[in-house]
Length: 322
Image (cartoon, rainbow, N blue to C red; front, top):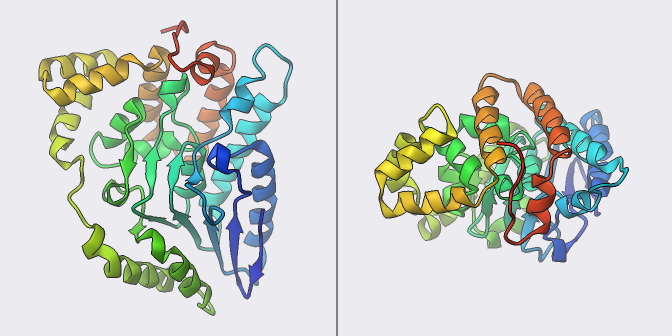
């Protein structure tokens, strides 16, 4: 991990794990948390920028679930420690007193979402691939997903949480997950401009990010790819249960609806129902309370087979309770 301190601004770089697409391990969590905690009380610290190591294809492709799955049937503190400490880090990021800028250039899923979406600013690029695909591995959208997803426009969050649908580039901004957009080639320029601020504040940072967005907008601006489907998404997913969503999709009977039914059929039934309820509860909770709820759920999921089956198998067969 590289943690250089430059003037009053610091860039926090991930330890480079290219083969694992910078998957977040417990070791990485334990490196990042104390540094952020210290910086938050450092009067010299005015801003934090978090980014992946140069040349990475991913910002962070999620938590290191493979390491957790390997503990199945064994006595291990990892199942408790990883989720407890990861969620504690998510909460810290949200409560930092200094601006936190995430340069989300590349694949950003699961744990990577937790490292970015709770910060003050999230800058997406044409290389950004956002997803919360946990229902496909017998889990649920965590790292504060229960707080963030139900606050997205319409039923977009529920749709993303249940299907694991990917959003790419400009769509990450249009879906209100990112706060700003710029080209991948501009990331170094953005970082440089930010670090030249002698006393950065929210307004100054925002102006710089808007400037870079405006300069590349003509090349990358496009219609929100899900715009033409939002009517269908809102109609189908505005339902009191997963079963009713499936019924709505069958009634729709469009090619799009059939694709969603195929996708949902591959997910853990338990994960789908828990995710539905989780987002229903999350809209009423603070982030801290949502993370507490997610931690309790994570430990319950560790006692069932779906998570281990989902992580270990290419074509999982789910047998968990429904």
